Length: 355
Image (cartoon, rainbow, N blue to C red; front, side, top):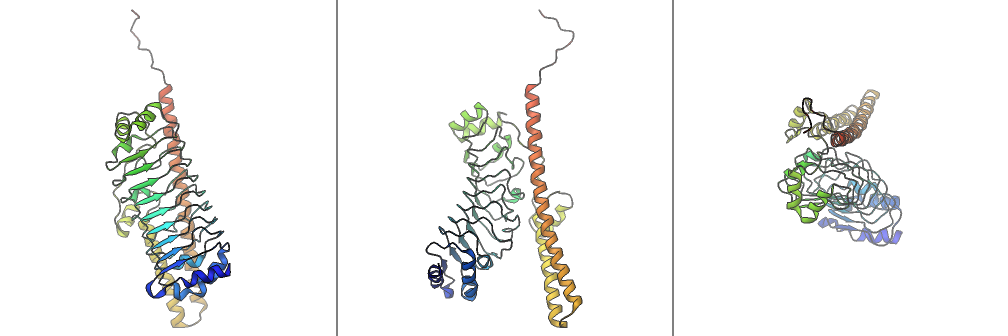
């Protein structure tokens, strides 16, 4: 194991910001973390990491502190949990496929510049919040019952892969995804499809096989995307989650703060503002401590700031869970209403006689 770690270290070209590659079968994430900490100065310019196909049971925390990282491949391990702090400000491509992840902190990747997230073949029941730069989300073969609560802000999203999960409704039925080209919903538990899917003007591929859908939709799906879109527009599908209307998308922190006044739920603009405010407050505490020297008052203020920041993160996580539960209740209510409407019998009209 130590030899493999040493081999990894020699492959780092700090002068060029070169790759960090791990060879062999390393099983100790903590040992790798220690090795990376020892070489932290050399790794600071690293832009590419590949530690795929090892036996890592945990992700090295030092890896998540590489600020210049733009691409990370961590697939084919046995990682069940990720750190709760991430400094990947420039990350664009992340491959976490074929691990044992059951959850990811909802805010872990929000400050990145992710373009592609690959979490195929894990055990995730929901996805974390992602930045609005994301173009491809590959999340097949998980246990997903819900998606990222800020998915409606992903106006650049082109590929959404959700095959082989446990979705029993389409959780983005009332969202505008203007650039979505490919949507894979195969092998889930969908009994109905929202008609709004037909309004995605850029859609080129829509896969629905392996769901307990109406026969008309199955036939249309087998005939191709045009037939399926036509069937959806003719009302050959249920409504999924009732359409609530899509608000104007906030383009920045100020817009997000203004919109949060009238829009319930988790707002990325407010979250970013919170990070900035608490970051500035903690930085100010450190400056005071350096300028005034050791002081019980400054220390108390610092601990209070850190405690408030931790409370904010807990509160946002609770909001995310509440919003997901709310969406699921809406889906169940819509499905029950549709079932009741289908079973209802027409009432006889008085005054008419059989001829």
